[in-house]
Length: 238
Image 1 (cartoon, rainbow, N blue to C red):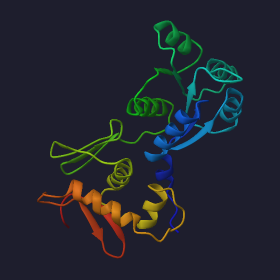
Image 2: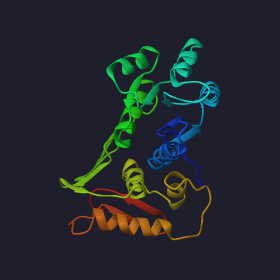
Image 3: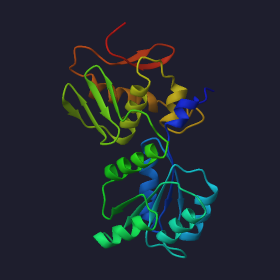
Image 4: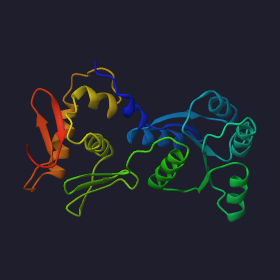
């Protein structure tokens, strides 16, 4: 079994979502995991504070109004103990005075509800980079194919391509390793979070769908199957 390299591990953020609304929390955890990050969840303020104190997180995403202990209290306690993990506050309280209060309490960013996940992801990645976390490129380019990690936009030759979340994650991983052979094991571990082979054709199906979207009708294909080894995204045929 091929284990992820250190550089691969470092491109992932480890996030703590402190949110008492189960539906919202499940959505955020799933969405962050689908784009390649690690997300834990705490359902109330006391559990959230305990996890934030003991866990090594890159960014905290904290709902302001929580049972047992509110979000601003969590941040204030952490800051008082010298814990400066970046914290983004989510809240239905979106007036200017509310945002100022959140930032003065020690929050690093404040996003009113409702929000788009794309904006939340961009803000979280900015906080992580400022804190010394993820520092990789946010835009990958191979030939005339471009993938923007922050806006989740993919285009080839200036024409936008619509991808499903798993297809986006697959292409992102392949483009990150452009010019290198990516094995099935690497894809299972880093795109599907499987540390075993499920003995299905899930990779073949997604590769086929992805190839039809980025290479169909193009003079020069970019996604190549390396027989007996895996897959590779590269510009031109060598």
